[in-house]
Amino acid sequence: MVVALASQKSIYNSTNETVSLPQLSVTNLWWLANRQNILENISFSIEPGEFVGLLGPNGAGKSSLLRCIYRYIEPSKGQIEYSGKSIWQISQQEYAKQLAVVLQETPSHFNLSVSDVVSLGLLPNTSIWHRTSEKEKYLVEQAIEKVSMSEKKCQAFEQLSGGEKQRVLIARAIVQQPQLLIMDEPTSHLDIKYQIQIIELAKSLGITVLASFHDLNLASVFCDRLLVLNQGRLVANGTPNDVIDCALLHEVFGVNSDIKPHPQNKAPHITYFYSEKEQGDE
Image (cartoon, rainbow, N blue to C red; front, side):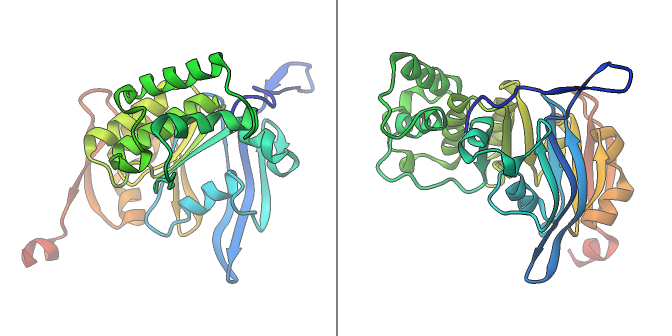
C-alpha cells in the first residue's frame, strides 16, 4: 500500500472551470450481513489532506465502513470512489499503493524485527523477491527514526509494547508513502501518552487520514472534521464545533455532558456526568 494512481484528478464544469474531485467519495453505501442492515445509505466525501474522525458507539458500523473502504468486504449496494474512480476498478496492487491501514489489533509478525516489519511497507511498489536498494534502506531508517524506534530497530516486533507496535506500524505506513491512511481505533488499548503520540504521528504525515475513535475528546482536538455513525446510519458530518453538542451526545451515546472550549485550540471539550440514579447508587 504506497504512492501512485493519481494524486488528485480534476474535471471541468459547464463554465470550463477546473473542479477538483474528492480524494475519497462514498455514495449511498449499504452493507448487509445475515440479512441485517449493518450500514444504511451512507454518503460523504473527503478532500485531500483532511484528517477525518469516525465516531459512534460500539456496534454503530465504524469498522464495517472502514473495511468497505479498504476493500476487506464488498458493499451490498452503493459506490466508493478514489479520485473519481471506483475502488473495485482499481487493481489490488495499485490501490495498495494509495492506501495504508493501521488497525486496533496489531498483526503477528513472528520472528520479524522492527526493521523487517517497517520494510514491509516497500512491498506494494516492489515484490517479495525484490532486492532492497540503498535508497529504500535509507527510507526505512528514516521512518524508524521518525517514530523514535531507532534504538529498538533490531528487536523482535512481538516483544514490543502495544504503543511501540503501533509506532512501528505507522513507520511502515510512512515507508509505504500512501495518499490515504485508514486507522481503525488504533489507540483504544494504549496509555494516553501513546494515544496522543500515535495521532500526532499520523497527523504529521501531511496526508489524508480517516480514523475511528473511542475517545471523543481526542477526536475533537485533532480532527478537521467528524463523521458520526449510529445504528449503521451517518447522523452527523461537520467540524468538531458543528458536530459535538450535548443533544447529539445524549442521542447517540446515551450520556449527559457539558461542553466547553479546549484551552489549547478551542475545540469542544466534553465533561461527562452521571445520571441522578447512578449518583445515588454510589
